[in-house]
Image 1 (cartoon, rainbow, N blue to C red):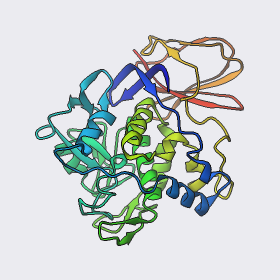
Image 2: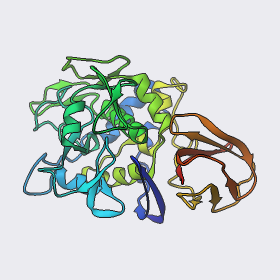
Image 3: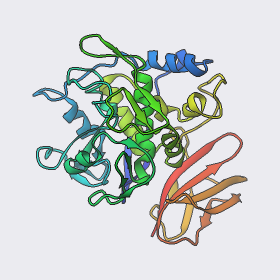
Length: 347
């Protein structure tokens, strides 16, 4: 384990916290080395299959308890962060304040509480009760009208668009589900196979969900952040399986993108910030961003929450001075060997 400063952007709130973060166990993904396409997907399935299930509700350790740890508010250990609203609410008040959202709807493949997929905590998130009802079993896609309670979300008759700050989180949960349950088995040992499709699926209880192209876009627009990394570690501590798309985001490109057909290798490149000793400060900032070490000919791009590029320069120094409006931004630092993503806030 190592210790470091971790930055969290959740909904409209920005958090700074000190966390102990575990590394991926040595050899955990060795079975997937050198695989491509369906062989890669099958190898990942074998790696994360057969997790340790916990009861959905119980007087002993259950999914409620695990979610209180995995989705804890970094600034208030009594609270959890709700998925679609970004609100921080008392973790013990599930009877009146929040319930458990199945990101992949349980009706799409595993409707029984005794099914392992039903209780898989990787697929569960704390959620405001009425917002959860509004999302229902809708597919994920762009578009719609602003929701009255989850005001950063859009919805229409057949789809739900979450806030920009959690779009990638949701996409990576669904990528996990389609690999973990390919195939899956219900409590009667009947086989089912979850699949992501590139269309919406209204009034449908088949084990399919959309919309794949939107989810892939969200994965790239909202990179893995520290809240996800910590959540993955907590759930792994209980279930003993990990979300590969948090550990190795480039897997998406090898399964559904430009690297399809190519052999995946765990050492192809650094695609997240967990092993990088580079911190930015202060964050929030009034415009001046400092780096914990000098950058040498590194490209820095900054994007607004709407995806507009607002800064693009090659930098050889340890700070930049930004003339940007107040708000949330994605800062991307890259050279030939690495890509680092940070979420920043300008006051």
